[in-house]
Length: 109
Length: 116
Image (tube, rainbow over all chains, first blue to last red; front, side, top):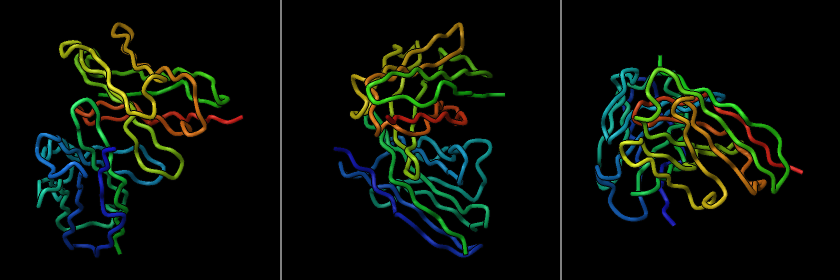
């Protein structure tokens, strides 16, 4: 069974930089897994931030960036804002299927 | 404006069936890979399945928990994506979203409750 793992929770202060990661139990995450990152706030549908590892949509704030880091997919927020408090999910593609990570609850204090 | 609107959710008994619809606008449905994602109450996102664009063969793939019970289809003239759900189980209770990952757009979701 394919498992995608994220940090369950992270806490950061406004203005700081934080990196969320996304690991696969099948081995190192590469661009071939086409990592996607999503943000979800309570009571709302998810919003896509990043696709294809590092490509942003027009609505993605510039402080969000995607990359590969140490065999994992990574989402970095540079200069966190209070409105960034949310649940963040990654998604990896495995040929004929895709798997979400369990999500990271980001708290901004 | 690109938009996805789901409908068809509701209360159904275990073993029953339900068909969800997702009406799209602002883009050509046949050209997009479309995905269904669900979220059980208080839980994370779960990939349910997808249908490829016509030019990529229009084939479907499903997550193991729904394989053989759920079917994704598409009516391009009606610009509507469907999720036919049969043999429903209590663990299928969730909000179901349709999404086009390549466009980054999601519907608002429709709640499916499977309970006796």
